[in-house]
Length: 84
Image (tube, rainbow, N blue to C red; front, side, top):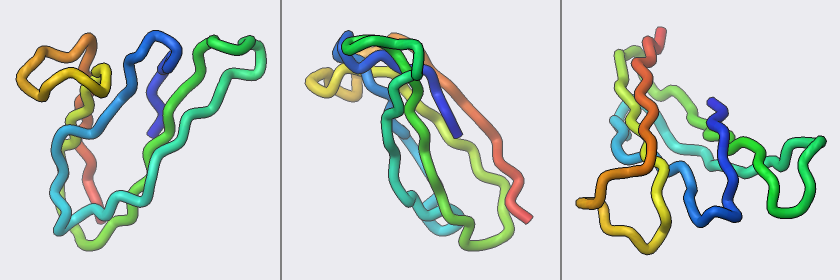
């Protein structure tokens, strides 16, 4: 999964919930868009490994690392995965 991001603003996408019995988080990485310069935008890619058949809702929030979880994120992204 890829989400647009510009880390120079201080904001970063983070997963805010998951069903760890169905999905195992493998990692995330930021990739600068080829046309961007230093400080420019790109996308963050999240990787998971399916562990069992299930329907899983993932929720991501675009936050600055120093903000508390109670603070509303600048943006959100939700997805329902059907693992077969």
